Amino acid sequence: MTPATLLTDATWVRARIGGAAKLYGCAPPLVLGTVWWYSLSSVLIGPVVEALVRDGVAADPALDAVELDMLADGRFRGAHATRTLPGDLETVGAAMAEAYEPVIATISEVSGARVPALRAIATDSVGNRLLWTVDPERALTLAEPLVAAIGHGWPKPRFVRVGRTPVVRRASCCLIYETANAPKCTSCPRQRPEERERRLRTG
Image (cartoon, rainbow, N blue to C red; front, side, top):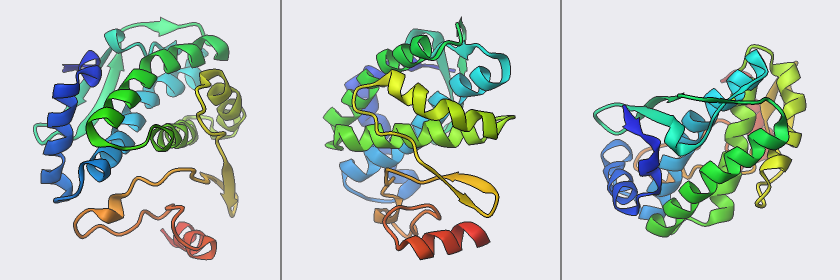
């Protein structure tokens, strides 16, 4: 297990982002940093919101309470929190901001990715991980107040329905299509709305 406190160590983060080229092919640091955060943010946020929906308490997002399960090639398999927090959204949101804003700043510093773009990715990760919980309809009602409690300019989470299924209407782009031989994500915001809906319905 890897301590999450390393996520604010610029030297360690630079090495991990550089190593991402082995997974995604050669690309500028801005692209690799963005793709890396897209994966990492989902792994970090997942345990927090899953516990919130399932148990009414949140896994503590503080970096000194989180361990990352990383594969040898640098991919993230999961995260584990060693503490919990009360489930009120103000407490959880403040703790998420305290934990993730320094990580966002570090990734921005070493890769050149813009802070607002990284925050938008994090908002979309909140939305996606809420939809993956045991009660996605209830989870939908938590998304906006939770992100509002985080503050710091994180954009408001947005959702649409494809048929009866709620999906995130993304505010962010992971830039995966700017790496070697990778297409745009099914839900990529950088495609025509009708094309995105067609791919979501058939994907």
